[in-house]
Amino acid sequence: MISSNLIGLPLEEALLSCAELGVKPGVTQTRSPKDKSSEGRSARVVAVRKNGAQLCLVVAFFSDAGPKEAQHAAG
Image: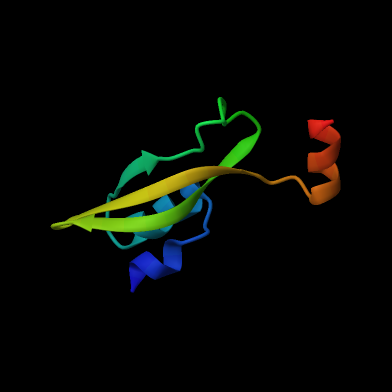
């Protein structure tokens, strides 16, 4: 099933996979209320929803930095 294969993928990669199958999904963003900016983060698919025939990718923003890099950036 296409939807389960998209979970965890970067948004651009998921959109490419959908395009190869002739599917043009909608995209919805979600984030924690404490996250003010998506700067320096990558959008990844966290859920896939179907509304009738329409597919919607739900994305959240994650830091691609390793644990050590993330600590350095935070402090």
